[in-house]
Image (cartoon, rainbow, N blue to C red; front, side, top):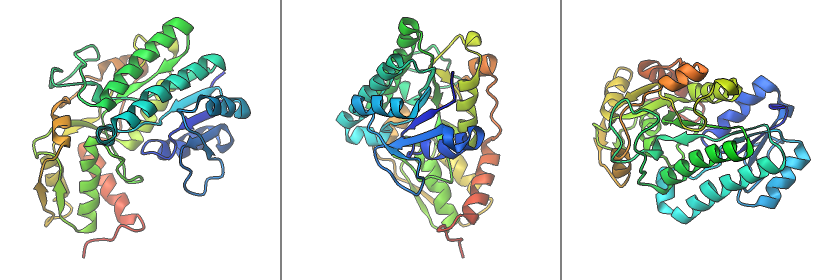
Amino acid sequence: MTFQKILITGAGGQIGSEMVPFLSEIFGRDRVIPSDIRIEGEDDRFIHLDVTDRDSLDLAIEKYGIDTIFHLAAILSASGEKNPELAYKVNIDGLHNILLAAVKHKIGLVMVPSSIGVFGPETPREDVPIETVTRPVTIYGVSKLIAEQLGYYYHRRYELDVRGLRFPGLISYKTPPGGGTTDYSIEMIFEAVKGNQYKCFLREDSKLPMMYMPDALKSFLRLAEADSSKLIHRTDFNVSSFSMTPKQLEIELKKYFPYFKVEYVPDFRQEIADSWPGSLDSSAAVREWNFSPDYDFSKTVADMVQNLKLKPGVPLPS
């Protein structure tokens, strides 16, 4: 049995904060248990859960009758470089606790997102396939590569159904940036809508694969619901909706805000971006579970601008 009681770890994060209402609308509020190390907001379903505490994890699974886990708790790329020890503890030890608990409690499905962070400078730059050189330069990327391999191991050794996909940069108007290298995209759009200028921490020609959050949520669930017998891959599907550079985003935003200006001042995140590919080959995801994003580059920007104009607390430019 799966999807009867879904535990979401990291439910207060960039993906988790949108995954909770997304899954709740589909499966019902009572079947979704959001958890995080910090509890914010007014959702009375939220439970305090530290994924590095194995005993607390066991208790939560038993108390709520969990049969499915969406493991979204993680320290992201740029934040991880500032505190590698914490990133290791949360991203690697935390995942291992999840997998151990899943075997112990006979969990039906564990969903674990991976990332383009698994790639490195030796990875090809364009149309990167699933099977390629993966030598990440960040502790975040290392942790995600370990997560992919642990997922395969637990599937082979214990027949645990572990699935995941390599998210590109994610763009959303609902949640603030969470310490990722591709977060310039969200920041730039926010500042344009506010009527401000923007100082970009990447070079204007830094091409990276991207995806709008509605497509990320839909794709994650589609993989979760896919027929396991048709999956050749398990934890490392490449997915991407489009690729863009900061300069291309600036030009697109000027269609809505002609006086918008961007200054490019690369910082330590540039080295991280330079180690990642410019585009991904998503064909395996298309073949094995019908990956089909709805939003391309222009449609994503248009929807972001439209929704941010309506969002409380985001003043319109005068």
